Amino acid sequence: MTHLQKLLATCLPPEAVASIHEQMYVHPGLQQAASGSVSRAELAQALNMALFHGLVQRVPAGQDYIASDVVGQQRKVVFDHGALRTVRWPSGALPAGEAAFTRVLRPLGFELQGTYPLPRLKMTGRAYSHRDFPEDIAQFFVSELHPEQFSAPFQSAVTRVLSTSRDPLGPQDIADLEQLTRDGVLPLAQALRLLPQLLQCFDRQHGVFAMADYELLLAESAEMAWISTEGNAFNHATDRVTDVDAVAERQRALGRPIKDKVEVSASGRVRQTAFRAATVRREFITPEGRVSREVPGSFYEFITRDVLQTASAANDPVQQARLDLAFDAGNATGIFGMTAARA
Image (tube, rainbow, N blue to C red; front, side):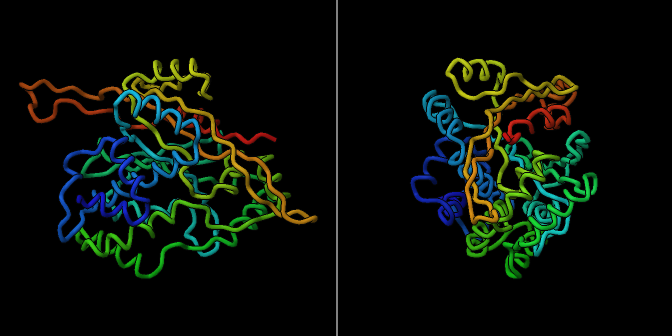
């Protein structure tokens, strides 16, 4: 067995471990036979694969796409990036905003690649790429919402919703992450224990809250309304495809809920589209008791990245070409609309 197989077996059933390996491209350098220690890159890849699997389980359109366009066409997903939303605000026992995730991402080998202001959404996005395998280990796009830019009643609702947040990481987890930062590797037994704990970070950490607060948040920010019901779960996972326009046309012809247009970056090198968010049911508190309501969940995205730079073999035989791994604030704002809540 490889380290990836052993790691994934700690948090996924055997059939899921097998299927994710069949469905996703993994760089050969991340498929080493199990030994005494696990590299930060292997642990990062295992986390990403588990998160991708969980996302697909929540998105029926993504499941259909995987079955027909990946498995059915005998190709593999190239996992480009996963996205999550945070709030830069007091959050109970949980570190506020992206700090809850940088404490995990940096030990795993991720480093800040770019910052993307999203003023229309009153958010800031930050992209983290892996220093060892930047093109082959999926990036993280972590966004922070800024409640101080909204009304006072909105801020009060955010405080009430987030006040019950728990921290899924304990002292041993933090110690393991510090050791990983220092050494770049962990003993296999520690890595096997740590991965399920890291996976818990990508979930909703606060409890059930008042429907009135949801309505208040929804009135000012569809993004905060989404965070209130889904927390820090993967908002979307993105498949890097050769021709996103062709993929979108095929999905539309199949009647799947694909976005109306493809978002194109200012550089023209990054093109993105997505399925509309799946619908999920969540519980709320009302004066009459608990009720459930349909709200937007997560979604599956597609991206095409062009080559950023091509170097001739004569000038640079080592660096032949690099993908443009950047993001685009305009694209991100358009993609965020996939989870706009319906009143």
